[in-house]
Image 1: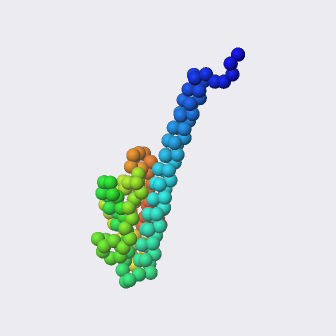
Image 2: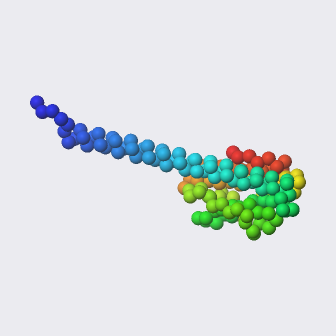
Image 3: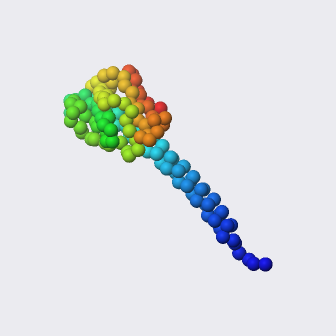
Length: 146
């Protein structure tokens, strides 16, 4: 009686290992994509709140806002003071994350910090339109992420 493994037994174990490793890798990739989307949404909320706070404090005597630029392959947003065409801090979205909202400005009134008009910003995974986050700026100035 010989001891050891046959070639078929080794190939079966290798096949199962490859299948499990591939499944784990795909789950990790999906998790990372979802985390990138959540982190991007949190950053946008933080920038909107920063612009709102700058408007309330009337920093540099200006009203402040955030401009969202929806350009295929290089979506970005930036905070602005007074003129939306002059970025103060420009941020590109993470790779794999895209704006699902047309190019737009979200501006806040001085002192009150209320938005000039309520707005909604949507971001999504570039490769999956069903996975998205919505950032809402309502008429009372509340900024929420869903």
